[in-house]
Length: 104
Image (cartoon, rainbow, N blue to C red; front, side, top):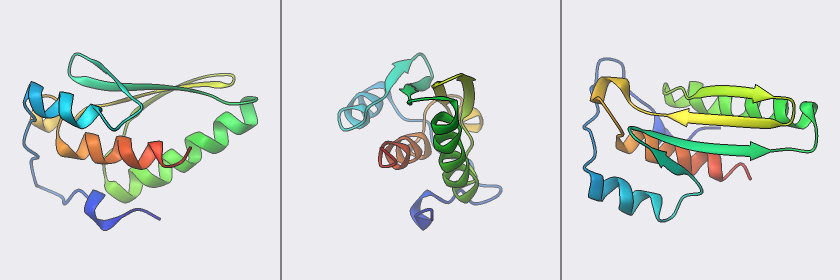
């Protein structure tokens, strides 16, 4: 289900993106920047649909070996991504954000 380009190889440390690279990467995404994190809030019809969305995100994250922080409040899901090893945002965050956007 996950694109191999998203796959994070064990032991590899991704390179931190510059502010300009982050700004350019956000242009095509439905995410906001909060410091060294990308943040997306998704609202679904009800709790069940919110959980279906979270499960789809989990499959992407596992396949990419890159995991967002996820907060669930009934039908509202808040996602936060960053690359701790890079000390900020990396291409992996942008790629995972784009894949999550593709979920709808």
